Length: 261
Image 1: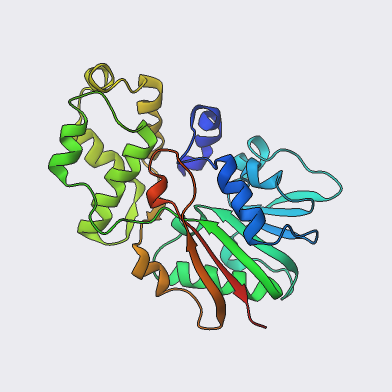
Image 2: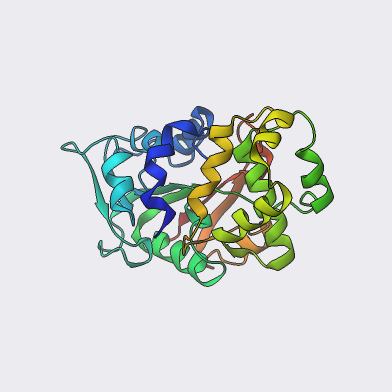
């Protein structure tokens, strides 16, 4: 069972870095030029669905579409589908946007394919913009991660979870099964009540990591060079823009590029 079947019930319990902050939404609007034409949203992120007047959201999970999408209107619609196989005609969209979307496919092949797909769907001169979870040059060490669980937390639990995932990716490759995140977390912190008491993380937040149990999904956490290696050669005006003041924002730039066709 994919953890996305359980995730919608927990949606309101999470915030940045897992959810999109207002300053990131504003940046994506600016980067894409506040388009009035149709925008392709890779996922059903409500904050991005509300940011543009005409939106097609595409998500693999029927549960996410049913429970997280703000609702269809005359100008906004969500469908169940695979980002790598979107059948819309070329040059159909005034922008393509996503939040963490490039981390939800395997690096390098699927990341490259998704970028090429986005470029195909963009009108000439239109832009792609996606917030990334980018592995830093020096992820926290295993000792640092273990020590973080012994004292009052300096970041929220979801930011710490990504720090753990980035350490795993540094050691074993950018793409990792989400079950590996749960495995290493349970290895480091077998007593969740004690962890909550020491760090101040709410037990409810800690328990959200349980959605990874038995999930077949993979995430990827490339570094900057690995993301750059996947950008199509005909993309232009490539930028990585830092944005936000939330926990782990330094690892969450917005990648954008324009179609040259």
